[in-house]
Image (cartoon, rainbow, N blue to C red):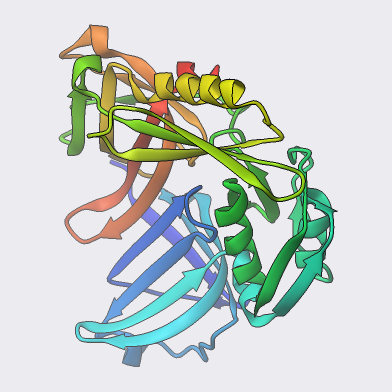
Length: 321
């Protein structure tokens, strides 16, 4: 029988001896990944000079075979009703302490990101989309706030992974990663999955085209009773072409397959957002398929053990995966 093991290193030299619960949330929908370590009423037993801004590495696994689940900084030391919490954020945390303000008549995405992370150890992913826009202004904020505004304004996923800043379309970062396989209904693992048919899927797509001069055009297609998903396109000046792209995006919303989340054992395979996973359902073999991962939640808790909840996005085939 395997035994859970962990190694949590703070400030490069201190080891956390115990905790009562731990969670790690990661998604392309949020700029920063976050971790929370609950100490319960155990803080008095920790002889560590903890401070905001200290680095933290969280390594989890079994039988001392560990994988790095989180690398970042302590963002908050918080007393709570049931004890004490150490809140953490990934490499973007340092950008929350840095002021930012700027305006440009014309600037490329690459140049803007380089300006935002200047004089920091953060590297920028090489596969950035070639986007130039302007005029563009970011009012008084932090560098972290500048990235959040950029993500909202141009509709790209902006997040941090292994020391690298990624900005691009969702699900592209994990394109070349090897697929993992997850078996449903196995090992007593719970899931919150729903099988949806094409007929029961209602959705709308709002397509927004952003021009080099900053002007926008938009069209909306789909069932008006369904939820709206916004997609961004660049330098698409023709309304018919924009409508065509919106209708193509609609095809990604209408498919037969699973929605929701499932839980797998943690540690045996590292699944990250943006990657594709193969789902195998022994009860319904014909429902097997590959899905993109929208988010993950790692949790270690008494009586539950080390678990990874995987939140599904669309089918991988809809993105050419």
